[in-house]
Length: 87
Image (cartoon, rainbow, N blue to C red; front, side):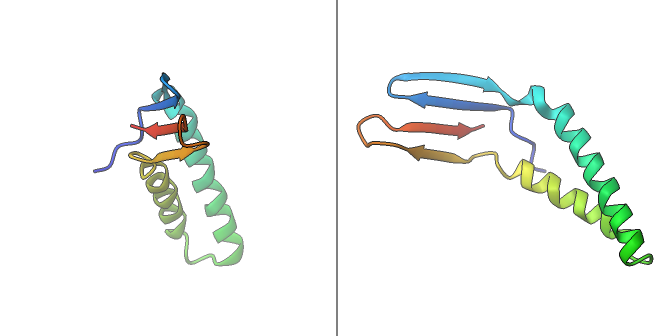
């Protein structure tokens, strides 16, 4: 099982800061519920017999959010790049 990211480490030069992403989990869960409801309504209008696909959309959105864990982005000039790491 892949867990959602807990912290984001932002670093510029020698200075770094840890941002607690786990505080955003309730908002992400609310967004996930709203996504499933919107997908269910859209599927009811477009294809009434394919309602279980709404749950598949919710699972896909959750997997994308959880897959951001381990992402590392480096941008900027080489001596002191701007680095963002998701833990």
